[in-house]
Amino acid sequence: MANVNDSLAFHLGLIGTVATDRYAARLEKIELKPKHVGLMLVLQAGLASSQLEIAKVMDVAPSLVVMFADHLEELGAIKRVRDPADRRRQMLSLTDKGRVLLYDCAGMAKSLDQEIAADLSKEERALLTAMLARIGTRLGLPLVRQAQ
Amino acid sequence: MANVNDSLAFHLGLIGTVATDRYAARLEKIELKPKHVGLMLVLQAGLASSQLEIAKVMDVAPSLVVMFADHLEELGAIKRVRDPADRRRQMLSLTDKGRVLLYDCAGMAKSLDQEIAADLSKEERALLTAMLARIGTRLGLPLVRQAQ
DNA sequence: TATTGTTATACTCTATAACTATA
DNA sequence: TATAGTTATAGAGTATAACAATA
Image (cartoon, rainbow over all chains, first blue to last red):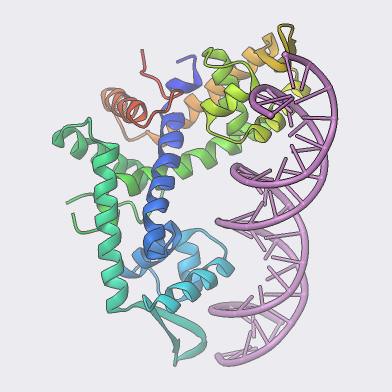
């Protein structure tokens, strides 16, 4: 391979940016950004509950988690409860509203998948998802999980 | 599919961001950013030569192309020549230095591919690249091309 | 004194608007 | 008057640093 644009990394980077941009455009309708969805997914998956733990899982600054959580709390998607055992810690959890929002986000992702992978057969999509899941695992991305 | 993190779009977005970040980290050593490489690839592929055309192909603001071209010119990677037929137009072209840099970028991309796809067989990588190329074509990304 | 969360500040990236020169 | 390029300005997103509350 003598050319940058034959590489996997280059393909993944360009396509990933477009995918994120288009997903963000759809999420705007429900006042969310991709990172808000990421935070809710961390809660749903039970990967973390205190804000500092969430920051580590998401690999962002703790101050960002404050802003995401503020917004999600305003929307009624999460609740914040002080840990009685350690009152410094804010324990975040999904509300029913949050679960509904997450369901809506899944619908948007599904329709975006149709758009992105319209030229791929069902078998090819499954294969692609499986390979991406393996790459995600290798890269240490806990939110990229194997399709069932 | 009831979950966001089973979608192709979500996988592609997360993995694409990591790929771009890691590629950017390697490019720092030669004072380049991914968009500089993108501009050079546009020139190499002969997709555009005036700055305004380049902005359209890259889907960025013309003012950004000015900054990228300034930097690449400082590095000696491109030259800027006024179009004699229309002295408003700056025609950009790769220099030998630029071609060497692009070759170095390809090497970095190749080594990053090893890191990203270490768990995939050669056949799986070829399959993945081919599917990504089809997605890129569908999304109208001229720089994502079919592997030969 | 160390840690969790919060607020204030600064930096990067990029787009928009204003400007210059050529047509 | 319109267009190519450039410069100036502003906004989004995010990190770092300073601060407050609790341990």
